[in-house]
Image 1: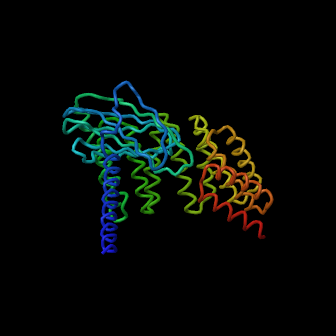
Image 2: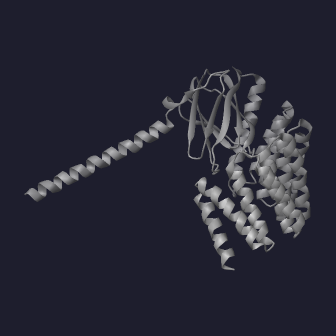
Image 3: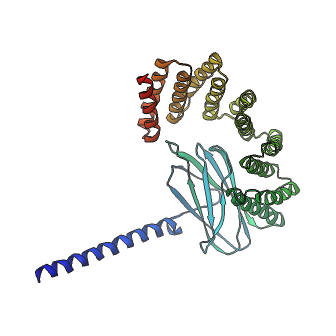
Length: 366
């Protein structure tokens, strides 16, 4: 009898604990998705915050039906993704322009209903150190006829991005991008035109139609050169280099990476400038030009000392170790690997640490 009572008591405790856990999980999810914990955005009051992977920063802004909202997000060493939700919780749009972690991204929405709109900002970046972003309301007004066309083009671009993301619908993205492109050209919006051309280039690249990809990237590059967008121009040269190297044309790949270097410098982007020195060094390794390769790695090493982020320093040291190993310089390679290893350990990057430890063990075994 006592045994049965204890058993019943245990069962009751089990179900009580289960209910508590379910409520806790449900409550956590509600808290994560609820706008009640979101920060209110106000015009003229920009917000600057640090962010790391797995964090979601939520904001709200109140809109009346028929209002246009333009947000600007300046990204500093982090590539953020932005989702906007209507008052009823439906997704209005997802915004993510490839900027390699720097530059300003525009978010433009029109209010179909009055109420609080939620803006969620997060990153998929696995960088070891937090990045920073600055969010502000750039435009706020009743929707104009021009705004309606802008919003239509934005919608076409987003629809095409979704199609591009799936192999079976990738080709279908091209005519949808073309609809957006036509509107941007009609409105005289060169930056948006270039972004759409680049997106089309990515679509053709993923379909291995590399000449068409180059054509679209080239048209985008012409626009960025005219508008003075140095970062986008540099990024495009690197894309050209990737395509050339995929076709085993390392000479032209190197030439494109070299074209990007002064652009990174003029843009004042020291982390990208430093990492591109590594990229050029690796090009010379592929071309088996030892003197040139080690010269660029030395430049990268010196440049990395002026970069605040230890992850960049660790990356340069690790890549320099790879180059030394490729040229048979065992002791030099081990030296750079160990320096890189110490930094990655401090940054708690276990996967990179394990990879370096394996490289060190293999070198020591030979």
